[in-house]
Image 1 (tube, rainbow, N blue to C red):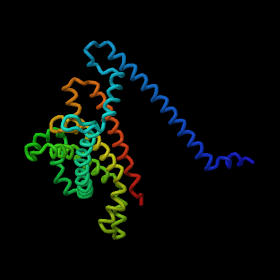
Image 2: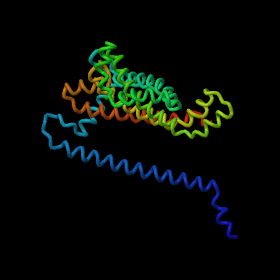
Image 3: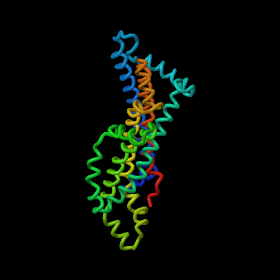
Image 4: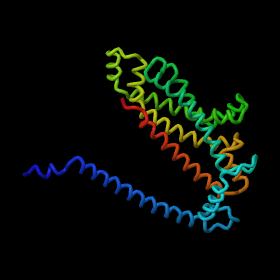
Length: 279
């Protein structure tokens, strides 16, 4: 008779309870988000309502109106000056994804090599430690001097901004792998390719994903600054053009769009580990 209560707690009931807890958590988080959003708008309105500067202060109402205007003309394409925000956004994304992709293609294999080969790692570490702290924008003049092309220079800057972050996280991920797994694979006479693909890469995946997420976020930050100097189209160019025209509301709109796209990019990279087989 005393075991009846324990039998009632079936796995299905435990799953249902966990689902209810997750739903309650999401509901509370959504409620808090609404509260914080209303507080943010209220503080924003209070901070800007006292300015009498000819409309330079970006109030919530004016920024919302400008957002509607920008989105309504998002696909306008009358180059060189009258170009919708979508074309600026696509130009920035192309540069970021190309530079970031090239950096990942170089950094991940190199990180796996350096993480497993202490001799090569010791030989290259001084180069990595000297170049890693250099600001990505410091490479911009050098890129312009060597490549003599604004588009290629922007991609080069993104490549340098992403390379070291992915490389360091990959090396760190390899070093966290339990050596017993690799020793067992050698005992079973597994090839180096099988050891890398079936043991090393899956075990290193959390570190690689962390590096990719951080690198992509950094690249998205850097491209805006780089485009203010070398871009003839892009989100950085849009921000700089609007600033020269003293359209502060447009800059607020650009910040919102840049932040939203950055969030989507981060979420996309975070899902990578689910696409790779666990075994």
